[in-house]
Length: 237
Image 1 (cartoon, helix red, strand yellow):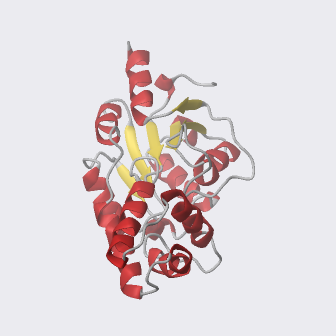
Image 2 (cartoon, rainbow, N blue to C red; image 1 turned 135 degrees about the vertical axis):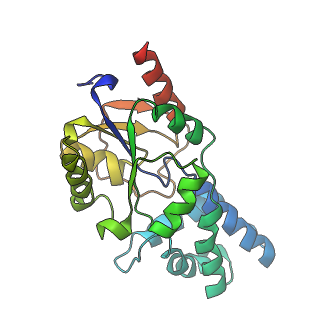
């Protein structure tokens, strides 16, 4: 652990999966579609199928891509192969819930840092997520602003340019995320300090998130965002 929590000015956050429970949102909507069709689905199987379908070469921006993903996975789940169901899945993003600790922890962390969202979601979806989280962000970068998705270094460079314009540098950023593939590995490669929020602790596999080629040991590791907020409070004394 190279730096103290006092050494950072900015906390950058992955949103979907770290702050917003997208796995719960996805599987709840799919279960509703299944119930209407008179079938039952297995949540972990659905997430595995989602992961394989989501990260294909013809993927669209998230969550608009959920229409294509639904049509790809529906046959394997015994669900209706109908575009209206895919649209139902896409629109469900407007109602996805935050993890129980997210809003309170973000409000606490905002007392000490400038909070910056970094999400692969499009701006229209992020606006709903931000409201669900209590609108805590100092700034936000979505796939619409960056023109790309993490783990593309270009996404991170946009944020580096932003903090540089404020007279700061990436050395003053702690990147907070649950995805080893999208965030923790690439942030290490780019020389950032990072904090892994292990949302799937106690569960097997990577759920709806693609498995990384290798595991990256983070600078900080908590199983909840509350854990980070409590550590900051303790460091503050």
